[in-house]
Image 1: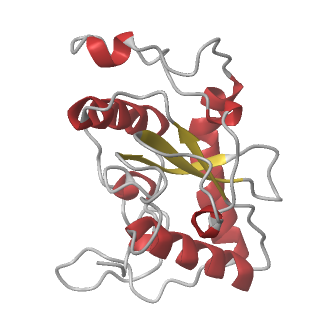
Image 2 (image 1 turned 60 degrees about the horizontal axis):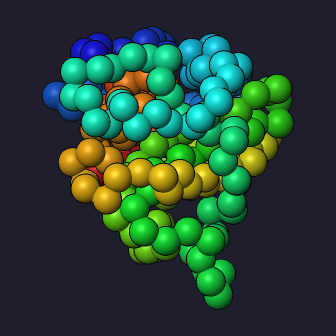
Length: 199
């Protein structure tokens, strides 16, 4: 699936800095932030409403040719954890996993899936530096300044293959299906303002 960049479409009244196609001095008002959230919500809400008897069917991983959009991970069936879970004395998950960072904005009646990642070590991946942490900090700061609230969580799905290339294939399939705005593959699609100045 080819992503077309729409960076700047959400903010047409703002200038673009020379050569790097990044909006400068964007005022992230309450209205602008809600409009951005609604765009993401509109795409994802139909996926959240779908029911699946099993969160992931392994045939997706085993058959390279099969890319059926109806086979998907149901994030709401996974246990939400605070983003600070890695500071706990013992970690709830270990080993290979997919992880999903989500928000439940208080002004919406549904969730937003912000990021999908894969890891060989679920108990260690969220420690230390991670680009998504920077995006989340910018996101929550922008919401707070606009008088909006977020309810962030991270969820792990550990019934995944140990082989990295198979986990990455599953991760990419889910990214293309859900279009989470903080993944590098989809940021331009949503004109994600929280990632523009982060290298």
